[in-house]
Length: 360
Image (cartoon, rainbow, N blue to C red; front, side, top):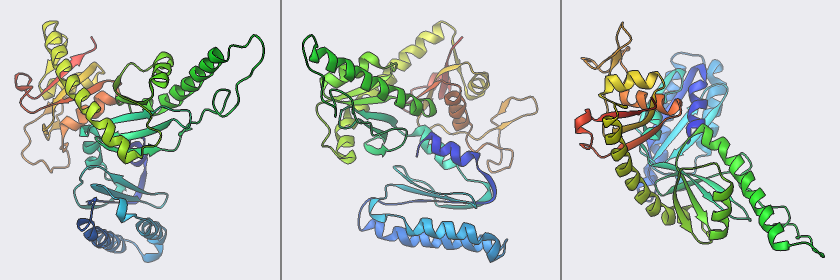
């Protein structure tokens, strides 16, 4: 799942919309219980629907749900599973992070757990650069999921790729090949921009030095977080993830240290804000350049009559209370083109666990 998938779910408004989320298991024998848990939750959801609607009214939804469940590949699950079904759509998402067990019937899909998981997971893009072909992966830690839309995987079909280079007197085949490679990787970068615009994450590259150099030369991306050098065409997503994640992990650690230094500098220049209420206010104005937040910080809150964030919440389950105002801030900053960097708990003690580096 990526932010495009999340937005698709959030944009759906149809009653009834059924959301089922649950933790799953990657290996035997633990994953043997997963079909049973899914069946029980599907039964619960079905009974709730039939308690409110006639069987004829919800038959299309239940047909979609049953078809979705029948297609689940329990041998290739990860840590979490989402089933989202209404009369117009049916979606299954296999996720590399644990979700709570829930059955929700509403006029929208239940996405709170997904927002939290997407916001706080170590997520990044991977481009495996090659002529035959270049592959794009959505990555969470060492788990890679190949993207097969938007033109990916991309194969170099022109001269120097699938097509023979021109020959003859006066033609520098080496220069011609290089020029065609630049154009190919320029096309790769253009196709990737669409995904980056929808889900702006750090980018890791894998490939031989020649292709890495071409891509860096033509790419507009200045946040390449890590590089894995060498021919990786033969690697499965699983093996590529295991190979590239240590490099990315080290880069995330270095990024955390660097952003803490930037925060200190911004504080000295009076271009930083601290405390959740102040950060929430300024993030809503679009002033957030980089949000720095402790990994384990969660805080229910409500917006008072003056439009200010009120953290004095007696009942976190009350209808007017945000389950987690921290995740709301994260979503706001990302939605306005800012960045989010997580740090270890207690690293932002002087800022009350959250800080915002300001654009102005």
